[in-house]
Every structure is written in C-alpha cells, then in structure tokens.
Length: 390
Image 1 (cartoon, rainbow, N blue to C red):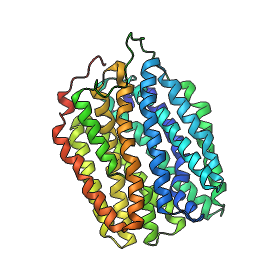
Image 2: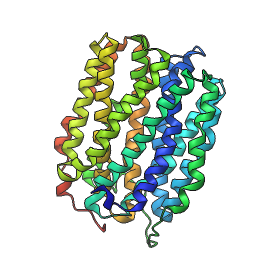
Image 3: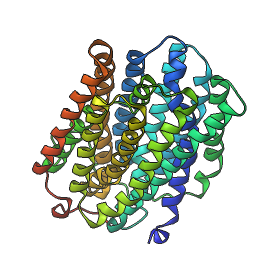
Image 4: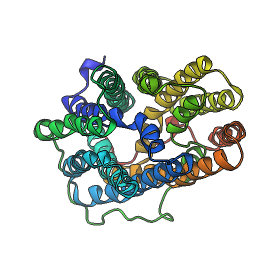
C-alpha cells in the first residue's frame, strides 16, 4: 500500500535520508569528541538543549512564514542547505565553534521541518497522512541507520581521526541538496486576505491542550546522547559507540514505518500514550541497570518508542489545522516541543553531575508519565473535523 503514495513523499524522504547519513556519522561520536577536549555532561546538556530549542523555535516562525507566503518548497530546501553547509565546521576542535555550528545546524532543521511537513500533507489525501509521515520518518531513520556503521568502518579499518571523519560525513548532505530538490513538486496556495497570526489566544481549545501535552512530553525527554554517555560509563568502547546509535535508529525506523499505519487505523492519541509509557519503562531501566548487555536492550526499546509516536504526533497536529494555517499549527507543535527540550537537557546534565545518573533517569521516568495522563483530556482525532482541508 505504500507504493500508492505520491512521488513527493519519497523525494522528501530522500532529502532526510541523505541528510541523516551525514548527521548520524557525527552525532553519536560527539560525546567522545567533547570528552577529548575535557568537556562532559554539563556542556553536552547546554549544547543539545540550546540547539534543539533554537531548532524548534525556528520551526514556529518558519511554519507561519510558509503559510503567509506559500513557499513551502523554498524554505524546505533552504533549511537542508544551511545544515549541510555548516556541518563541516564541527571538525574544528574549538568549543565555541562547535557550539555555533551545532546551533546553525539545528536552525537549518527548524527552517525546513514545518514547511516540509506542510508540503507532504498537500501531496495526498488526509486519510493517508499517517502512512506518509511514517514513510518519511522511516527514510529519515534509514539514513541515520547507515551513518553509524559507515563511521565505524572509517574509524576501525582506516583509523582516521574524528575531525577528518566529520569532514567526510558532510559530503552526502551536500550532494543531496544539489540534485533532489529540482524533482520535488511545490503546491502554490491561493493568497489569503488575512494571513495566519502567531496568537496563542486565537488557537482552538484542542490545539492548546495538545501543545501543553507536547511541551510536557518534551520536558521529560533529554537528548538521546545521554543514553550513549550512560553506556560509555558502563564500559561501551569508542569503536562500538556508532553501533549503539545504529541499534536505536534501526528500532526507530521499524517502529516509524508501522507506526504510521497504526496511526491511521487505530488511534493517534492511543499510539502516543503507548509510546510515552514505553519511554518511562526505558528510563526506569537505565536508572537501575548496571550491565552493559542490558543497556543494549533498553536502547532498542527506546528506539521503538521514539519511532512509534512520530507519525501520530505530527498527524494529530496537522489534523487540528485548516489548510490555510497548517504550517503555523505544525510550527506551534514544534515550538512547544522545543520549549520543553531546553530545560530537559540542561536540567538532566546538571542533575547527572550534581545528583547521580540513576536518580536523574528515575526522576525523568516519573515526569514522562504526566503527558500520558493528560491525554485523557484531549479529544480523539476521530472527533476533530479538519476545516478547509483535503
């Protein structure tokens, strides 16, 4: 049934695929690279918290701007291009440059995401949105799946240094941005007399509830790099680090692929609740586990929950919106997520050092159950009628 999806879904997926090959050759090795410069959990928490928050703040304005001008393809390509062009600077072992590069990389993600998702929903009927998001996310994860083993091959067989690896990793994203966008079809929207406004008061009640839930879900979700850092403390060798990221991504890919089908045929709200409950289970496991072998299993479960909720979260946001303000609504969704991510990673890094990793994982496991409970106050997406959509 996925072969019936339009070409745009696969082309947008390919952009994500090559970008994530590039990104995930680098990302799982960042903790080790920072450690080689004497930087630990606090710096990692600052970097990831601010970077992801900047990304999601940018998504709000990018989604609104795309709705205002109707230029979803232009902003999508611009976002991918910015990330691809700045990524080589991660090879420079200077903390300030690494911070700036990571911030610009994530801003590029912020520019492209809401317009890309809006372009995807414009490409097909609403009944297939979950499947389309599932395919796009699966292709994204497929790129992330290939990145770590390529990095491992270069590290172990060719014994290259991390800065050189980071330069090589930039190539797939740069090549993709030159060739793929010309085949992506844009959908020109009719110019509306009253462009959407970034006003919290004008949002519908279901959307306000949903944004609050997403904020709380993000608040209990620090960077996945802390899982890698925990495995490193349990004895994970540097050469095996990309394989931990590979496992997480493989499970997320499979879960995203089928999670889109589940979202369309079961319930997006229930799928989110199931995924977030599984997140709590994984964090309880990391709180008490002292064995590296069991940590591999927990990372696999983390990947499953991560992929499971992706299509449902995006589809629910798109379902609430009308066609004229879909980018803005998706922007609010990403903004809420980013607003929660900043304190999530910052606080996690601080508590890791000041308290203990075990207690910190347990605290966040408990926090992650709150959005699960609040889902009961959110109407089912089956009950929400989408205004002026396909």
